[in-house]
Amino acid sequence: MARPKKSASRFWSPSQAVFILERALKDRKLSAADIKHYVGSIADEIRSLEERLVSLKDAAVAEVKQTFTRAERKVRRGRRKLRKMGGDMPFPLGKKKRGKVMSAARKASQQLQGQYLGYIRQIAKTKRAIYQKISKTAGREEAIAAMKKALGK
Image (cartoon, rainbow, N blue to C red; front, top):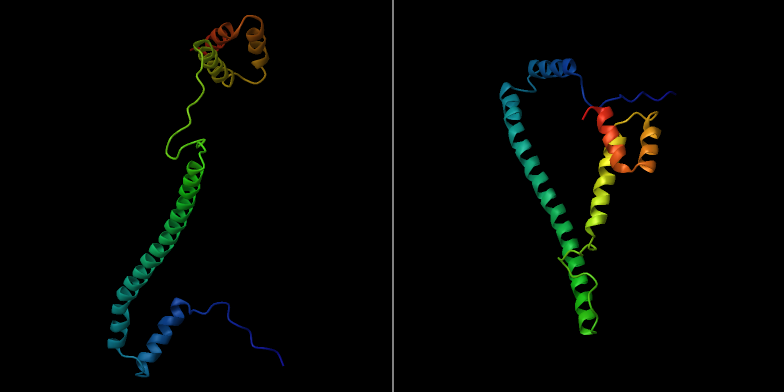
């Protein structure tokens, strides 16, 4: 014996729902007051769902905050232990590590290299070799000047 096919959806199509409502009204199993009551309860249902979502969000955020607070306490305890032992902290909490001091010549060289790279990217790949050769022979300043002229800048 073949099994009956299960319907693909649990819900009725809009036309089926209208038919069912009309039939229930006709058989006096459903009144217009019942329908008004159901329609009126939609707003209450939405409100209760929204309240539930808010409480779930609060619970999730509280759990995350709690986890971070525990981790911060562990870090502080570890730092206290190190201080008690006479150890120095390699990077204190809340302070940034200072970068190395750069000479003026190196800074100027890096800025020039940045300009060179900015212009070379605007040049077609087939013509880049020309400007790379200029950079190697005459210097980056000359290559930058040539690229500016070629780009019309």
